[in-house]
Image 1 (tube, rainbow, N blue to C red):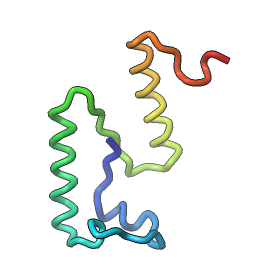
Image 2: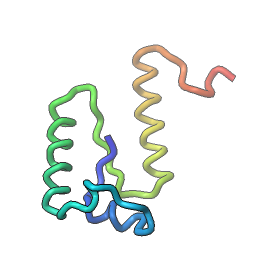
Image 3: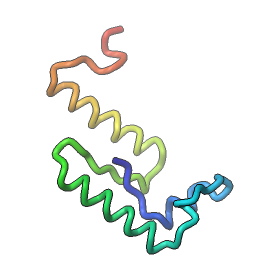
Image 4: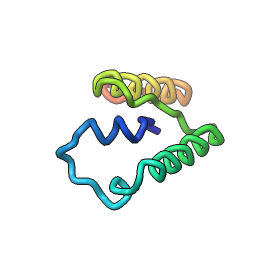
Length: 82
């Protein structure tokens, strides 16, 4: 699960069209984020990733975590078979 404070998410791409949920008050968006973070903490199958970083840093973190998951399951990550 990619986690970023709502204020930062909104500033990332101000030209992006916002849907109904993104037009809600900041307090609402914080409650939604808190709910997702709680679900992530309670679920052993969910990994919470800090998305308040560069796109390349987040992508590298996702690839690393997926790679470790595949290794635990003894599966080859994409591209490893070439």
